[in-house]
Length: 305
Image 1 (cartoon, rainbow, N blue to C red):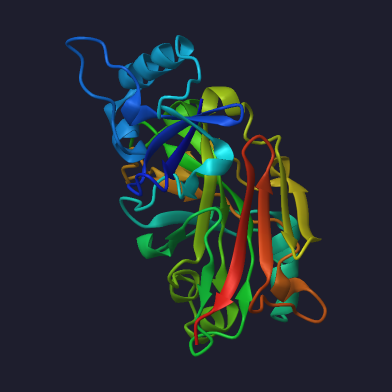
Image 2 (spheres, rainbow, N blue to C red):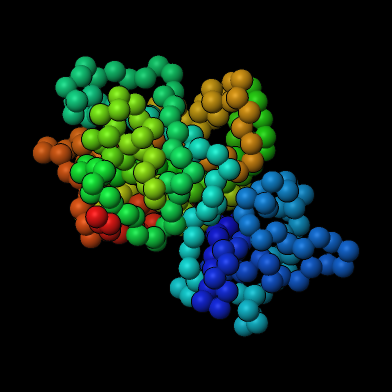
């Protein structure tokens, strides 16, 4: 299944949708069997309802055909929001989770390259989340070094604590694309990553969430990022130092993961700060973030001061 959060000109309220080819079903408008609860209006609520609700919707859609009664929309007619427009808590992120990126980051800062022996975690504030085709505000009074980072995002579906690696993927609802935009100058000034990672709008997410069963092996997907059509990052998730199962195992030690939690799994080489000379995003730049099996986000950088 492929879930989105959509709105339309006729109804600007963001709500749950399901993609079928080039059509999108407005879940709220699907028929409901007598004696059953209404369909959820938001993806986060739907995830929290659990597997029985997921199967019920899948069964309903298996019997549903696109039709012109307001239930179905063409994909090019809707507004695409972040799948979870307001995440329930900070986004969990991985730093230096590709060896090539760890090397370029160390070289850019004149440090000895070291490959992490355990996952490096940080977080981004919920207010960073923006839609897959939204403009990204760049406050030039705050930062002059906006960098890009294409990443595979993981959406937790089942709560768990101290999750063993062998069962980690059982806790995954689905996968999405994330751009972990970063203010490199703030990252350097504050001697930690949270501030430079957490400016408003600095986490485009989407364009949709592909369920774990449909997505397949998360360690076998191409990941790419382009700026104004030029390829900046091109890699495969097989190159992660810590795969999704290892990330969930370590992150969940003594820390409960809950439905709707988002994990961004780290970026490969090719970021702006690692280039010679360094490159940073400018007003009007268009950034495309693509994950195989999920799709492509397209965000324009817009100066706001």
